[in-house]
Length: 178
Image (cartoon, rainbow, N blue to C red):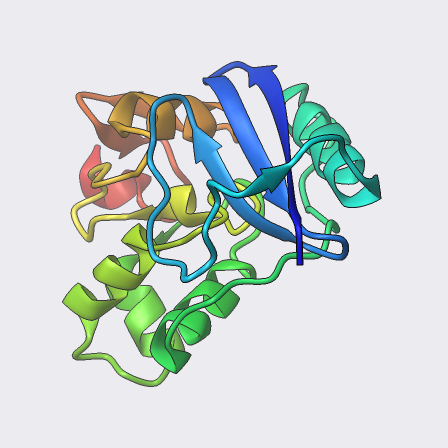
């Protein structure tokens, strides 16, 4: 199936959206390289389609503060474990945070915190599958494919205060980490 590419500018720089005829299959930020999918994003057909148009509009709306939940369809390739992690990430609502341990517990494997981190790092559709909402157990910002500065921008857009790469003034974490 051919892939299409659309580039948009956002608060975090250029975003490249990749889609086939029915789903978004990849999203790359700035100079990020694709990770984790067997889908080759280098073979792209010129032009665009309705999925790309929808994804671009939803991302623009997200960055302008008018969208909190994406509806554009996505298709991800990965192991069953990765897919379970990515499915759990889609349940983390706008402005909410989870730790890697929270995600591990949610998928029924509380000892798999590091494996959850690797799965999150392989997320082929960041922002739409909101891996930026996962933080360390000490409220610290941790790895993000677009870089920690990008993760900070995304979390601040969602209402979080971040000082020295740690979440502050969050309802769930503020008492423990202020």
